[in-house]
Structures are given as structure tokens and as C-alpha cells.
Amino acid sequence: MGSTAVQRFYRYHAYFYDVTRWTILHGRRRAVAKLELRPDSRVLEVGCGTGLNFRYVADTLDPTRGRLTGLDFSADMLRRAQRRTASHAWSHVDLIQADASAMKLGRRFDGILFAYSLTMIPDFAAALACARDHLAPGGRLVVHDFGRFAGWGPLAPLMRAWLRANHVETLRPYVETQRELFDNFDVSTWFGGYNFTAVGRRSA
Figure 1 (cartoon, rainbow, N blue to C red):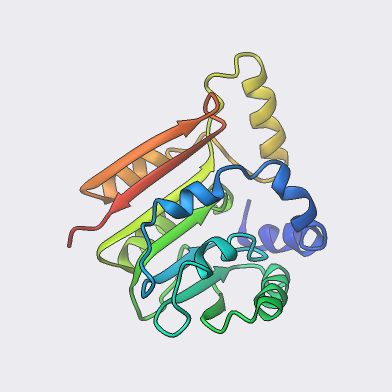
Figure 2: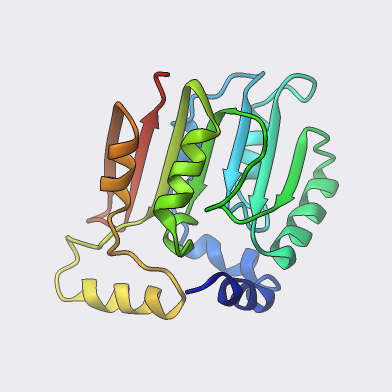
């Protein structure tokens, strides 16, 4: 799916995203915990959407020292994220509209999160490389996303097909690409490959 198609898809889905996605986007709190944030951490969420994950990050940070930046390609989704940020009075949250595969933010982060977003980015390898460039030494990059449903037997191709119809591609080498970018790397899966969590650490 091209970048223009992404924007069209979310122009419609932004209206009911929050009331439907909780049923399928499992394990996000656990993924944020793997960032091992400090109160003064600088955090980037790539593909933040409407900000569903902000509470897991923002409440961990000291508002005077820590900072959360949410980046998304969809202006419609970011408008929802802005409303969520304002309603919680999160003064330490910034929002940026940008292409994840070409972002140049001019600063580095202690933690970077992709939560159910990488599988919707057409040039996912470029997005991972850009994210690594934005990661401070010692920082962590966590990718939490749909897996390949390897343990689901005959249901696996049905799940993959349903997700593909919703512009989610599960069969690309996300884990392998992330492993190539980081010296320190580990990955875990959940519920028969429903999702995976891959953690990369930048040593230098």
C-alpha cells in the first residue's frame, strides 16, 4: 500500500479506530515496558495513530524532564491524537506529521516504539533504518506487531488474508531486518504467533 493509500485508509478509519482496535491490538502495555523508560526519557512513537498508547508512556515520564513525540503520516489520525493529548493535559507530548521512512527530526531518543504500525509502512526497512539513526547510544527500539500466526494451523492464511485486506502485511522480514540493524537483539512471540515483540539496543 502506497503512502497516499495509507492516508485515504485512515481518513475513514480515524472516526472509529479507538472503539474497535482494542479488540485486536493486544500486548501494547507489555511492549512499552520493554522500552525500560526513565522519568527523563525522550521517547518517539512511530505510527502513533490516535495516541492509544500515549497513556502507557506519558504517565511514566516526568512532565518537566521527559518527552514523548508521536509521529504519524495521517493528519486525520493526528487530529484525534491531539484531542487525546489535550484532554489529558499532557504538556510533555509533541505531535509530528511525517513519513516514517524518510523522517529527519534533528534529535535522538532514548526509546523508539513501533506498535502495530510497521506492518503498514510500505518501505518498512527504510523506516527501521531511520529509527535507528534517531536512537541515542544505549537506547532501545521496540517493534510490537502482528506475527505470521505460525501456530494457528489452517486459520493462519485466513488471518493473514483478513489483515492484508486491511492493508497489514505480515509476511515481510521485519524481525530479520531489525536484527541486522542492532548488535543486541531479542524477540518473543505470543499466542501462537499472533504478535511478536522485537527489542533492539543501540550500543553506539
